[in-house]
Amino acid sequence: MNVVAITACHTGIAHCYMAADRLIEAAKALSINIKVETQGAMGIENKISKREFDSADFILLATEISPAESDRYEGKNPTIVSVQDAINHPLSLLKKFK
Image 1 (spheres, one colour):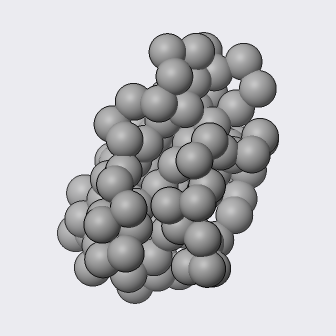
Image 2 (spheres, rainbow, N blue to C red):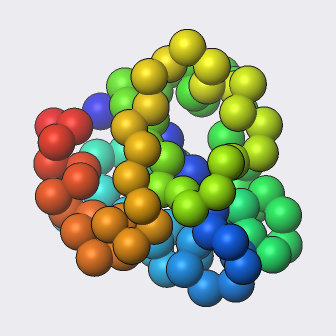
Image 3 (cartoon, rainbow, N blue to C red):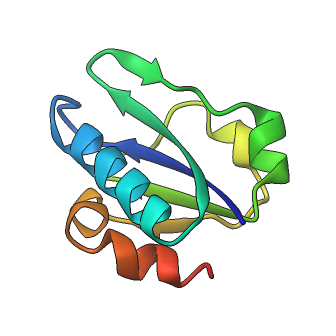
């Protein structure tokens, strides 16, 4: 199973990176392949390509703001959650995709 995720928050200093780390840890525990793009103070890091969006089984947006370059996953029906949900409940979020 392949999941791609974007994490983004208002200030982009800590929470989007914390959410990314928690999602990666949870994905490892569940044997899910995941790539997480962060959109923080440093801009877009670990950028997910349109091809990766197209081949993903599921797309997760853990955001407090509208992610940049949303045209990459247009028409894909992503699951949208808060950054806090990704930080506090990453296992239960990813279990929904299994």
